[in-house]
Amino acid sequence: MTVGSEEFVVEEPRGLLSRGELRADLRPTLLTMLVVALAGVLLGLLWALIAPGQATVTTAAGASSPLAAESDHVFDATAIFFLLATAYGVVVGTLAWRRVDRRGPVTLLGVGVATTAGAWVAAFVGTALAGPLTDRSPIGVLLDRAEATGSATAGAPIPATLSTVPATIGSFWTVLGAGLGAVLAYLLCAIALGEDDMSRTADVQST
Image (cartoon, rainbow, N blue to C red; front, side, top):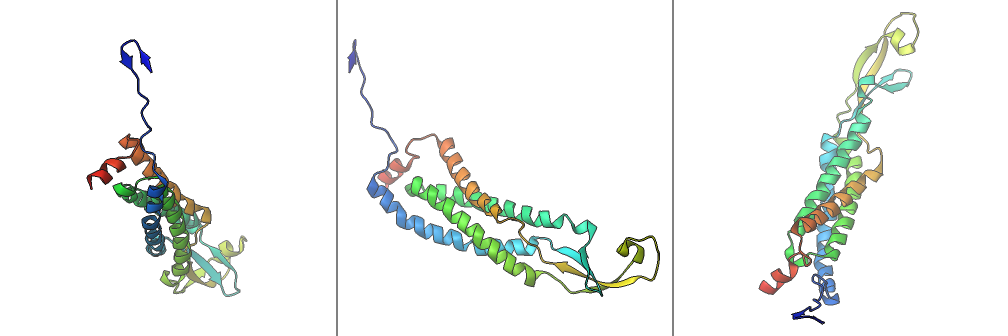
């Protein structure tokens, strides 16, 4: 197309991957997904070590109730898992971006699925390990009868035992934080680079 003395040439869009390139990305992406998912075991172990349990008092009659000061620990355990899972996803997404020769939609989808699966593994492993890792050695205590029974009548203290209930993950929806963290980290890196081909083509040609 010619307008005056200037000629405009339609350029081919950059950054489009061929089917062959997409197929070539599948195998390394699957291997990466396996490693990332297995890393969820370590994430679950870390959560089980740092998540707070809940102190509970049990009377001789079998009645039990958590201490008032410990009521926030249920939320704390869930929040800690969500933050760990999200940080895990961000780290994986950032490391995946550094694989210049495999940048593209296959890797993006792979890390999103793998980190979500890894967080599910972490949730199950962490829940299973929280019990054995929690010190639940009962301690004998005496409760004030008026406070324990909710009456104004004072009396002899009530014998009870103080133990710790293992931490639990309040909602398994928190595992989605890992996948969102990975995808957002990957996309933010692509946006910051600002190249249609994500510098993949130049890197492959140079090698």
